[in-house]
Length: 309
Image 1 (spheres, rainbow, N blue to C red):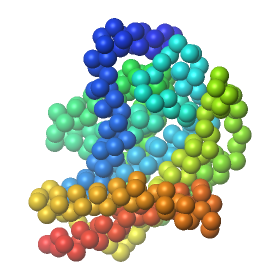
Image 2: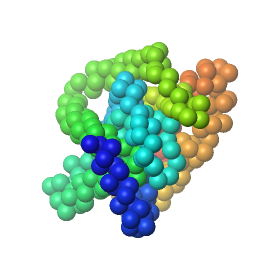
Image 3: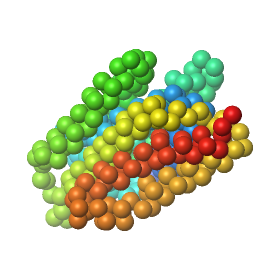
């Protein structure tokens, strides 16, 4: 049934001469592009608690989603049925749950929760955007309905759990310890378990497991950095968001530019430098850890310095 649904969407895509395809591609690209900076803008400019709520929800969801992907090892629909022709680059990663849906639900869902009382219309827009991203992943042929629904449900559960956790600050250290333990356990589990070795017609493995393992170190390092950074900020820095004003927007823009440079541009050089000392995966973990520490510790120090009231 899921394959037939994707074939129906594929036929619709072709029959309409891909009139909706550019918009669907933009939705997918923006999810792992500009949307990732939204939690930082909220954290630095508007609400420290609100931004941390979305950051934690996003990082926990991405880490847990990768663990689930590597547990179930579900192949992409075009790997299961050659009739499915995805629009765009054929990803060589596992399919279940959808990573784009996980990220979109965590960010749009977090914004929806934060704005539901004061700006209900914006909360509704965020909910619609989440559903559109889910549909886009089906429309483009990269995920089945099961993949996107599972991603939605998992991230909604994480949003609820993080919200409850942040309401009990008296257990902050316990939650942090459990989080670090979960990161260590998740990274070890994904790194050590065995995986299917099915080959395509081109003689290559259907899934690049090494790349998937890189992702668990990436998301694990980011989550560990966020947990550690949250504790450091609460105890030693205690900054106040800059406010959504000219100075605050300029500081946020500069911060996002530096973070983007650190996280995306210098990653390969950073990892290659550390590889001889701590293996490639260790370098990925440290790089992600440092990048997140910049976001939640270093740049808040800059904001506190320039926005003292």
